Amino acid sequence: DVKVTQSSRYLVKRTGEKVFLECVQDMDHENMFWYRQDPGLGLRLIYFSYDVKMKEKGDIPEGYSVSREKKERFSLILESASTNQTSMYLCASSLSLERGRQETQYFGPGTRLLVL
Amino acid sequence: GQNIDQPTEMTATEGAIVQINCTYQTSGFNGLFWYQQHAGEAPTFLSYNVLDGLEEKGRFSSFLSRSKGYSYLLLKELQMKDSASYLCAVEGNTPLVFGKGTRLSVIA
Image 1 (cartoon, rainbow over the protein chains, first blue to last red):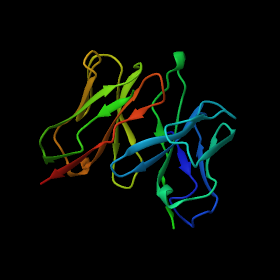
Image 2: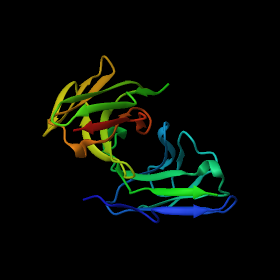
Image 3: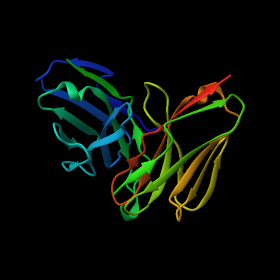
């Protein structure tokens, strides 16, 4: 079974703090993704990575950065947290297939972040 | 542009059949996924369609028509535990694009 773990289930931070969200997968997947999920807006892609040290902006990268130093770990960084970054953050990973396709994404349990 | 539409909410009775529709417009098409997400939990994979037609997996089936940009998820013999959000997602020339999800309530 694929296992995607996230460092925290719940997190409370203050405005202006630097926040690190860690994601680790144990299935040697090439692709990793960070989403945020908000009521009425669905899942929105923040950043993704198709390989170590590689990163691509998703639909809403502003205010976020990422790091992928090892294949199994993908970190999301909020340089200076703001109240509008209060959300559920979901990490996912998938295996690459031929011709640029990917297999299904497997999600971590999510981190519910509250920024006060 | 990329657009995926699905109904926001649906209600159905225990033991009944419900069909959740999804229409999409994306750049390229490499497959369509359905995920189930219970409240407060992560999405879990339900089905994948890349060719036209019906894929059946137990009580759940998923249908795809690529020419119409249309899919549906069919849930039979509904159980209370099927109360969840159902997400349609399309893989095209970009990473997966998700719809906003359909919240299904199963009532007795």
